[in-house]
Image (cartoon, rainbow, N blue to C red):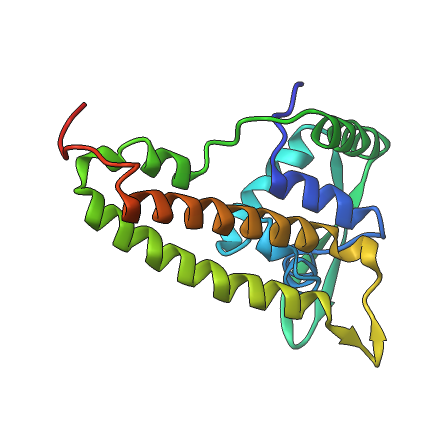
Amino acid sequence: MTFRRSSLALAILGLLENGPLHPYGIQRLIKQWGKDQVVNVGQRTSLYRMIVRLEEAGLITAGAIEQDERYPERTVYHLTDEGRAVCREWLAEILTTPRNEFPEFPAGLSFVMLLPPETAGELLGQRRERLTKRIAELQLELRTEVDGQPIPRFALLETEYQVAVAVAEAKWIDAVLHDLRTGTLTWTPGPA
C-alpha cells in the first residue's frame, strides 16, 4: 500500500522512533517540543485518523492498552520496521527535493490586482508588522533554555528556517512597499 506522506504522519513516525506512545502522548510531545509550529495538531481527531491510517498501512502497530485511574484507556502504538524505513525515505525526499506546497500568501498575491494599490500597500504593511513580531517570537524561541541549558541547535533547525523565511519575506515586502510608494509598481484595480 502506498501511503501519501504528510507532516503529521512524519511527526508521528519520528516520535515513535523514541519508543511507544499513546495518541495523547504524541500530541503532547509535538506541542511540548514546539513542533506544532510546523505540524498541525490542533484537532485531535486529525491525529487519531492519521494514526488509524498509519496502522492500516502497517507503518505502526497497536500494542498494550494502558489503564490509569485518572485517564481513559489508551492504546500505545509502536513503530514497525517498515514504518522506520518509510520515515527515513520521507526524510530523504523532503530534505533533498524542493516542492511547491501551495501556501496561501502567494495565492493572495496572485489576485492582488483586484485591490487598489494603496489598499494592497496598507495590507502588506500590516503583514510586515506582524512578521516583525513573529520574527521576534521565533528569535526568542531560539534562545530558550531548559533547566538552564540551551536547547541543542539540531532541535531548533525548523525554527532557524522559519526565521530565515520570515526575514526574507519581510525584506521582499519592504521592497514592494517602496515600489508602491514611489509609483514604480502600480496597476488599475479589477480583473486582469
